[in-house]
Length: 502
Ligand code: ADP
Image 1: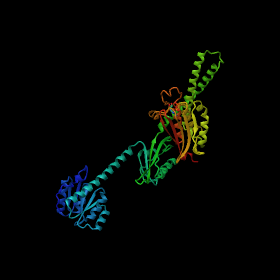
Image 2: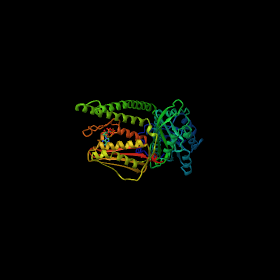
Image 3: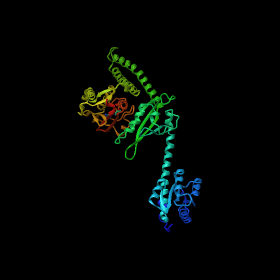
Image 4: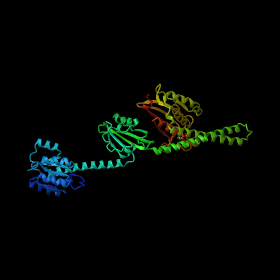
């Protein structure tokens, strides 16, 4: 080795945070090289051992793990190439640096093919040795980081209570965690590499995975659904919330899909019980309320004898309160019907323009009574969606009646439908009281009502918008609202194209 005592470019200077003491083995028959390497690398903080020939070297490697091997190519007995082949087949993580006096191109290609990390041509300087060792440590550290990350991810995914399934873009299983295997009642552990349809029979789920893999590079959509699966014989009524997304490389090419399975059976059951309870109570209240109302009207109409003005006033107020209760029980019934999935039953092709016009005409008198200008903005002649007529009419009716109720006299309400690239859009925009930013977050919550000076005298149940949201959700749509106090509100609904294409 040529002399060069410069302490610049020490390994510690070149490699940030060397967090392990590198174990180095020098396999060289030249004692001079052995000693020089050992001295320099020990000074640099490495744990260095030496071997005079290949056979001894291999023996040492078998007894103890070395991170780096400095290997002479030309040695008596076993050649460096044979040692390299042996080391790489049994200890692939070990970094082998070839020391050679004959660094010809053929040699280099051959050793590189056999897995050598780099070369040092004799004679080499201490700086060259430090540099190549620093490079090797950097590479070991990167590999260790990747291995640590991989093992951390594996532990995390394997301990998740949610099922996780990933596939490559040929629908072959790349990862299936224990929770997923349990959900599908699969006791086999060797599912990796098999096609998903060998284990999953649910066509909707297979479809979701296919859709995720086929998703074009310019879109990235999470495909979600609730799937009732008799996945396994023990879990006949399992309901699983499924979310499926594609995963991509840097060039945005689809490499496969990731699907997460969330067992929501218990939640669904509680929700169903709650809905059943609400609908039972609402139903039980509705008929007695109607009969009270009818009898009150008999008294109010004077059919049971004359009333004083005071008695009439009290009965009038009672009648108003009962009417509000009837509306509340009706809305509760609607909500529980929607939640129990009835609304998905009958869907037809609806012309949104015609539907909007019908609803606007229905509310014309109410708007006129408050001198509100209620108009339908012209867009297209017809816009179709696949939906339940009664429900979509209910959505429009709630939004338009809210716009009228929460606008001062002289306001303006504009309603329109339009087609966006992959959606049918419905908008109801008003110049009314508006909603504060804080309240906007809760606007679709059940029973939520904005309480302020302008709204306190307006009767309502706080259920209208949650009914709207449930209907939109059941049609796989989304609803957005923009609003500013004293400027007005704008509700926009988007229904996905696939939902209105027949
Ligand atoms: P309700 O009108 O019966 O109270 P909703 O669920 O329809 O129930 O509406 C919830 C609340 O949202 C209302 O109390 C009202 O304060 C507010 N809101 C709804 N629509 C509008 C609107 N167009 N402009 C201003 N406020 C609105």
